Length: 219
Ligand code: DX5
Ligand code: ZN
Image 1 (cartoon, rainbow, N blue to C red):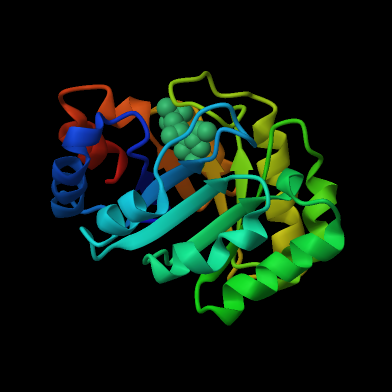
Image 2: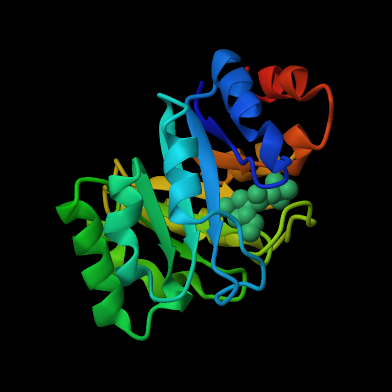
């Protein structure tokens, strides 16, 4: 398989999340994506640190934590202590490049993989200075904040530019992850343009046949 599906439990009812995590893990998921929203960087809120610690403890697969929060520096250690394997924060949540760099270093210092995410309106060139020290880049293909939105087509160009940069600069271990509006049709377009990890939320969990859907796109 040349790509990884990272199911996002964002749209799952809270009382069902643990069951869905177990079922998707048993169906062959290698990553699970957890969205953290603070009511500030984005309007919605999701899990507090105690809730996320409990959820992360439920699975052995790679726990991919996407922080949609202001001031990520203040929370990085807490999420890593809570069990995150990958911690991805937003370029737009930092006041300058020095802060972006400091947060990446902090994530590494506490032993997790470091990811940097950009919103649909942010130019890919903004994050080029950080690529050599990042483990992953998360390209948002919808506005962050909620599940179930339509894939923004111009994200494909961004994925492709990043992929070209990665190849030209021999950044072979850099993971290109895409988040938002991924379904059976948009998935292939992202992979063809260089994406290696696809976050999939509502296409799976808003449907009762989500295990079949997962197995089909994971094949
Ligand atoms: C949106 C989140 C996504 C969300 C994707 O802000 O970052 O991870 O769960 O949901 P879908 O797949 O429905 O776009
Ligand atoms: Zn996400």
